[in-house]
View (cartoon, rainbow over the protein chains, first blue to last red):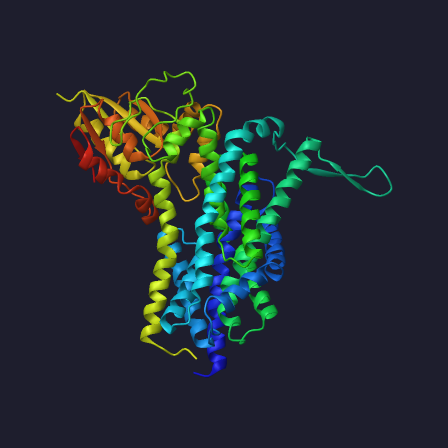
Amino acid sequence: MSLTTVLVVGIVASIFVGLNIGGSSTGIAWGPAVGAGIISKTLAAGLMTFFVFLGGWTVGRNVMDTLAGDIITIPISLESGVAVLFFIGLGILIANVFGVPVPTSMTTVGSIAGLGLATGTLNFETIGWIVSWWVVTPIIGFWVGGVIGRYLYPELNRRFEITTSEGPLLALDRRGTVPTPTLGPNTTRRELLTTVLVLIIGCYMAFSAGASNVPNAVAPLVSSGALEVNTAIAIATVAIGVGGFTIARRTMESVGTELSDIPLLAALIVMLTAATITTALSAIGIPISLVMAMVMTIVGLGWGRATRPVRVRDVRDVIRGDETAEIEPGALTADPNTPVRQIGEEEPREVREASDLFNPRAVIKYVSMWIIGPTVSLGLSYAFFVAFPFVG
Amino acid sequence: MISRVLVPMDKSEMAEHALRYALEAFPDAEITVFHVVGEPSALWGEAASLALADDIGQAAEEHASDVFDDARAIADEYDREIATDVQVGHPTRAILNAAEGFDTVVIGPHGGSLADRLLMGNVAETVFRRSPVPVTVVR
């Protein structure tokens, strides 16, 4: 097979990966805004494409350097780059078919690391650095969400009431010689402000998605020099954009539906936190998935709110390991001598408590999928490159 | 004598089969349709929305109303009244806790994606294995 043919196959694989990234990350970035009826799906996809490009073009280069040059000590040859892309695509395919969430950034790192292991060129220092950030990120997300949910959310909720009124947001005032935009018939100044806020935060999410995800689609082809970095970013942006306009119509709906009951304020807090974590890590070259920071911030926020009126001592007991110990909102007035239930003991019948919502074992099960995903991609990629050692 | 029947329902068609079976098999028993909201999901959206609600009990009732409305419509076909109960959190745990107050449990096989199974396990199977009272799985 000539090199050009290989490159074409590689670019096709890149586009497949990009399309799917576009589908999933547009859903995450704009699902809440679309679900709340603030912007249309088409406008969301358009904004997505632009800010993904901006993120990929600027901060994303640091992640590109890590993926293309730092994980293994030699350049990834074009042939192995294409094979790596197929493993990334396979991970996405599995995620789509079975509905199992597999963060793309982790699959990418796993596949490249598998190549490194098979050829004895893995840079353990870089991999260790990346993996430790993967451990720390969900903890940061949970912690930030927890603190906000526990101490700040009720106050924020009181101050920022977010409403969407009937009728258009803005109207044109044609009384003067030049038509000037004014507030729509039912629009309040506050509504305009929150709408703008939602748009800005959505764009920020899109930016961070670009920074973290653009390199996933193209870095394996950039490493060998087969694709110039700027061209690669452009290709990835177009693919992600097309995914945003097509596949994301469905994902924006499903994410929007799942998050629709969450107050918009909470969704904004979650997005702001997730985008900041993702952008910051991308800036220091750590490949990270937006969804990772996002999920743990949601869990933290919900958990923090659910446990709010509890004394710190009670929470500490729970964290220490007795997961069946209950954190009841009525704990302040409850009899302090009530014995803590032991593991395995039955809970009383009429428990309708918020703390039941974030059962630690269920959360851990979900997080464990983030460990299984990259491990499987690493294993597959390692086995493949041991069986077919065509690395140049 | 079976006088109190627990029918845990999700939003699946199989759960409706289970309810129909329970209505037919236990014509004189009191049937309680049980639904769990805020179960673990990919983004933990429902769970978080319940946690953030001012009144979690009321929010849970609202989330469960679709399932209960459908269940009542089915019960109407049999000229029966049903009781309803909603709990939050993990379905298996909630069902097993509730089962103690009943003579038997009638449940549909758990549907759901592979992700659901990885996250929550097979609810019907676990209830079948661990329930303190006899369980009928309606297929």
